Structure formats: C-alpha cells, structure tokens
Image (cartoon, rainbow, N blue to C red; front, side, top):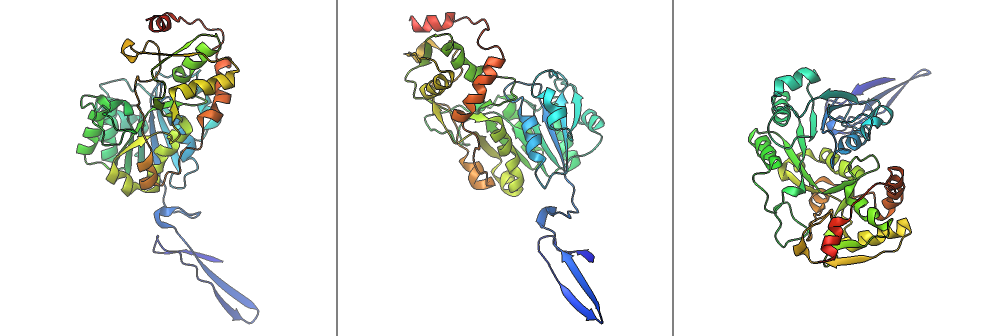
Length: 369
C-alpha cells in the first residue's frame, strides 16, 4: 500500500487503480488532506497559548477553554501562561493536573507592569499560532507583552476576553456590539492597541459567568444566602429586568468558535459573549427557591435607593450572541441555568453556604425605606 499526499490541501483526491499482473494486484491510494490540515494525516501543527488570570469572574475560563481546544483538530498543543498569584489549592487550578494533564502550565507574575515581550518570550521559549488572553485588563505590562509577542510570532489570531462591563447602554436591549463604550476602560485601551498593531484580532465581551470549578460565586449565592435563612429577597423594582447568566463551558465554546471561521472573526472583531437563555431577576429567585425547597419572599424596592448587596444592575443589562452564531457558526449554549442550579446548590452547601456568617443590614436599609 503506497500512500501519497495531494499537492492541493483543499481537495479530496481518492484514486484507486487496480492492475492485475498474473496473481498480483497493485493498489495505489492517494489520501485526502482537508483545507487547514484537519485530517488524520495532517501536515500542520498549531500551538495554542492561553494567558490566564489569578481568578475571579473569568477565573475558570482558561481551564474550560483548554478542555475545549483539546478536541479541536486545528490545535495540536496547548500551553497556559498562568498568573502565579493564583491559589493552587482552589478550583480550577487544583484540577489542572487531573483534568488537563497534557496542557503545559507555565507560571508568571502577570501583574508585573515592567514585563516586556522579551521577558514573556523568554519564559515561554516558543512561538504560538493562536493566542487567547484571559488575563489582561489593559495594554500595559503583561497585556502589552502579549500583544507585542503575538505580533513578533506572526500568530494567526489573538483572541481577547474583554468585558460587557465596558458598555454604556442606552435603551437598546439586548445590547449590540455597537453599544457606546467607556473609552477610558483598560479593556478598550487593550483593544485599540491590538488593532493599531495590525494584528488579526478578535475581542469577546462576556457578562455574568458561573461554573462548577469557579472561584467567584457571589451572583447566585446572593439568592441562596437569603432563601436558606428565611430572609426576604430585596430585588430592585420591577423585578422583570433580564440578566444573562452563562456557564463557563459555554463561554469557552464561544471563545473557541473563532477557529470555525478566522477570517469572519477578524472582520467582525467584536462579539458579545453569553447565553441566549435570559432570566428575569424574579425568575432566578423562583428557580433557586425550587431547588433549595424553601419559601420565597420577594420585596421590590425603589432603584433610587441603590444596589445594597444586590449582585446585578438596577436596570436591564444583557447581550445576545446572535453575531457569534451567524458569523462563527456557534451552536448556542449547551447548559441551562435551571438544570445547573441542581449541582450549584450542592456546591453551595459543600462550600459552607448554609452556615457562613452573613450581615443583612444593607438589605434591611432598603427594605425599611
């Protein structure tokens, strides 16, 4: 059996020729290569770098993205450049060795504003074809080093995890990617510098994220903290405001979707990032009460009194992933908040949520006004 690679990477060629010579048969097979090298006999190897912060709302994304990329045929090796300020005893960092053992982990002080591209490249010791930055909050220090290194490597794509928090919404919801932004925000400065550097660049703007290996639980915990103690839930009126709460695995699949169509991703550049399953503030309360098996007592208060400890905005504040679906072929969220609340409540109890000390003084202030 003789195997030959086609000179055209974008065309399937299968040629079977049978020649009979006495009792001998000769078969020549020309195996296909798919455009982009995505075949079992790929000649292309593509390395991925994930720059990961120390934790917080985006803390689980690098872990979930690495898991997602492991099954992507375009990616053959993955490295996480991990902020050394992370707590290795907590999730998701404690699960790196067991859940993504084939991913190379390199530690660095990503808060060091003196870090240069040369410093970063000295740590990494190799160039990367695809870079995801889930750490930087501006084009300084490590953030600038990521952009400068990506340019020097001539990488195929730099994908940045920004934030929908940069939006200054008007009355248009869901907020489109053209929503006015805070020009002074560090994320906006990062986006501008990357674009000015002439990179193939994409930026995603996620909202509220939760996940099984998260290290920030405040959004949904707020509801359970009050429900399990029989406390009233002070929710800003009218309670019908919508919120996008997205499982980190779905956010990771959105970030990886740039590989579906890199040209379209760069052409669009900015993408909202979140589930297409929206919930009202009161609805989240009802779903949590059902899972916890508790009574539900909601009291709406005047938004002029402020947030108190309420975890979301006073008004509507949500995005839609429609552009990612139409431009990148993202299939939509695979996880549902309603279903996820079952494991979430078990996690809440395991984290000591039922017994932790909580002050409801600010709740009483808005409820008694």
